[in-house]
Amino acid sequence: MADIFDVIADGTRRDILRLLLDRSTAGEHGTSVSHIVHELGASQPTVSKHLKVLRDAHLVSVREEGQHRYYSLSAEPLDEVDDWLVPFLDGATAEPVAAQPSLPDSAAHAAEVVGRAAASAKHALESALKRLPGR
Image (tube, rainbow, N blue to C red; front, side, top):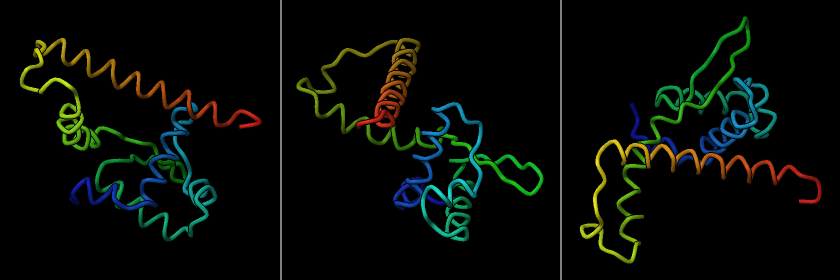
């Protein structure tokens, strides 16, 4: 399997992930390849090539219905990226990381879940605001 950072380094794959995230946030349960092709303005072979890379990295799942395939975001592999970035973000705080009090594992997990939910809600709100007329 390719390194997750190599997978998300490609702009087209990031565009596909963003599209799937936006559609998932809007309540869609899968996005067809033809819809992805239309939205990105890319060729079907190009989109299919990138979807294969994303599937191999477990960043998307696919549901087949007859001749059609519907893709959905599977964000769990991005936890590796998140884990890699967090120390850099913690280092940007005024207080050294070592001096910060540590939380019990259950509290740290709860804080992580709440933080992810807040980030997801912020993204959903920003996406909704962008779709409003006059914006």
